[in-house]
Amino acid sequence: MHRRPARPDVRSRRFGVVAVIVLVPSLLGAQDGAARSAAGHGDSATVAADSSGGRAPQKTFFVKRDLLATGVGAAGTLVVSGFDLRIARWARSTGVQGDSSRHRLVDELTRINETPLMLAALATYGVGRVAGSHTAADVGLHTLEALVLTTSASQVVRGVLGRMRPRVSLDDPFAFRPGSGFTGFETRSFPSLHTAAAFATATALVGEIGIRRPAAVKVAAPLLYTAAMVPGLTRVYLDQHWASDIVAGAFIGTLLGTRVVSYAHSHRRTRLDGVLLGVSAVPDVRGGVMLVVNARH
Image 1 (cartoon, helix red, strand yellow):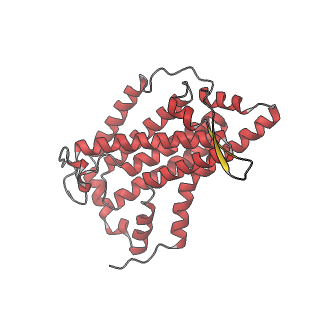
Image 2 (tube, helix red, strand yellow; image 1 turned 90 degrees about the horizontal axis):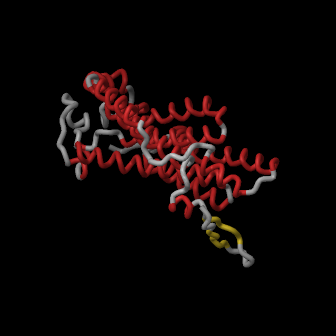
Image 3 (cartoon, helix red, strand yellow; image 1 turned 45 degrees about the vertical axis):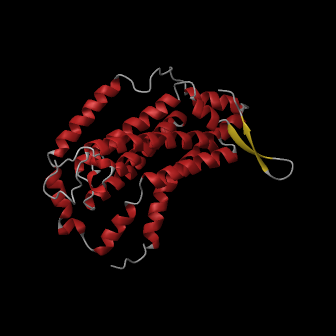
């Protein structure tokens, strides 16, 4: 069946959600730059502040309270799984599905997944390095790290469990084919990667905002987490995921997004951060661009 191209307003919504990653670091960087000018501090002061965030060193990536958080997340996922079939049938109903225009809108929104989010984070890092904005590079890099870690962990869980997608296992939310998720698309239901990536992004951005502008969190957090819910809801609507897949994805993304930002700002830079955040692009005397690497940690 021939599909009409997405309407301009739909594409603009999709672009707007992804562009948040680029705009937030830019606004934070502008404020940091103004503060440095007023106080007369150099870039080294900013690096030190971004590296520690004034926090006590965190010796390990995961901390003890993560065990409790994992237990709560697992319990929540288990409770919701008891309603998976009921929610799926409701989402399949005519009243929820609506007409073809609603379906096209949801289909476009579901394209906001780990790939465009990673590209946006990478672009933010690149723009920060070229423009000499440590804040933008720092936020972009940590968001990218959270996305890579979340995607990798989710793919492993999906591959091992091999949970069947609801559109394939219509009336059985507990159909599993262990190990088949590595090779089969229809057995990669748990957890929702769209949701995990969205929540990892939102959590990383909220964490970075909290470090630099704590007062702004009460505004940014509701907006970012509301946006993060959209990809998961579209996957339920399209019969690609059970509701418990969404809960699990949200937990994984939130946990890993929190851990990446917390560890990065309470611990000495990793070698990877030291190299990537120490590279700057500066113009040379011949009108070209050269890369300068600051080896200090």
